[in-house]
Length: 578
Ligand SMILES: Nc1ncnc2c1ncn2[C@@H]1O[C@H](COP(=O)(O)OP(=O)(O)OP(=O)(O)O)[C@@H](O)[C@H]1O
View 1 (cartoon, rainbow, N blue to C red):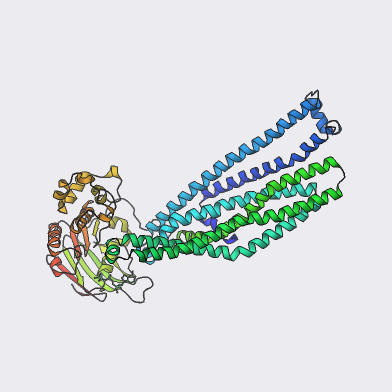
View 2 (view 1 turned 90 degrees about the vertical axis):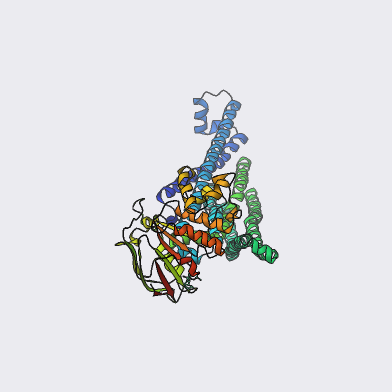
């Protein structure tokens, strides 16, 4: 746990740390005010039960005479109002403190979720290939919340409660040392034993809940995502069963955590009541001044009223913090421990300009091995693509076509070798290079949005230029279809474009790739899922771009690339023929 608190320093920046330190000082003041509130009870009750103190105590008498009081009852009324005023101020301050605390904590929670989401999006594709999106969704949406609700909030609660309890104990030690020492020993030992007993189990329930949560999201995504296949195969129950299995693990862990969160109250209360009863007995037996006895008992009663929830909160919060360590670990590992710093742009975009070229793209001795793989997927590949030409990449399945294209796209960094555009290495300014690329994959991802927003994908609505959309639609030969729709560009395509045909989806993908008018267009099996006639039509649209754009086309069917100027044939990761 201490280890996690030390690591927190790395997770938060200077501004955030300052906020938390301010919060800590506010807590200190809150704890002090709580103690002052309790500390005033003894003199107040003593004054009420023995009003002669007004004349006996020099300080009180000085106040009494300076402010010209004429009767004890007037004096007592004013003292009662002041006493109430102190409590009022204390509680108003606590209200303000709670407001500021929640504001800081919930804003920071959102900021961390955004930061984690941004960091995932900006990590290299290799990271995503190795991780399950369900786990990443869980980390952004659930684990960050869990970390704040079960670690950061309890941490501040523990701090404030420890401070309050310490102040109250110091006060009690001063007034009544022996009974207080007995209380400290009994309470400290029992809370310590309780925490030790549940320590391992609570950490394990945090891990179980985290894993089952990720798997629950995974089964929902898979069941709902496979759509037609699930329906046709009639395998709905399979997904329901998988989901329920994980839900049971989740519910068990949640139940256990909830039990351990609530049970300290009963445990502490029992121990404390026994302690207070013993102490009362000790006081009654040893004390003979009745006014002092009543005041001390009142003090203990008040202290108990404040201490029971306080110690209960300390133990519950420590349990919660342990439970949320697995959540902290995943966030910390993904944000700090991974080799990419979220604040550093992964790609070195020195400006917003695209990397233009005059002559050719040169792939030079490129070798690439996937992480966790024992052999190279691409071995010493070299070829050139002259500007304005169309190049077809062919080869058997698994020969490395997609891999070499992904390297050209800047998705993977080659293990060895370089890629030049004219004489500039694309990895020196990959973002500028990517600004000059259009990419059409085999399956186009369509968001449940309008045609306009799907074509100008990732652009703010007010930045979208409709004339560019229509130009791109014309190039993709989809203009006529969109013009015929009642809502034109405002037509919603449905989730994953369910309201469009396969060919129309692919054309939307082409229009999307052409929206920014890039010089280079990559097609990775972009037409292989279509029937020959639709493929022919789409390739006709693509071939119209020949001469204006440099085309790099991966295809299985030779008919797709018959118009290409050059063919690169891949075989087992090597170029067989250019
Ligand atoms: N993420 C990955 N991790 C490890 N190995 C991979 C990964 N992706 C691809 N490979 C391996 O790299 C090799 C080349 O794969 P690639 O996808 O480039 O082939 P391809 O020619 O495009 O195949 P296809 O025509 O079937 O799409 C294959 O042996 C494949 O198993």
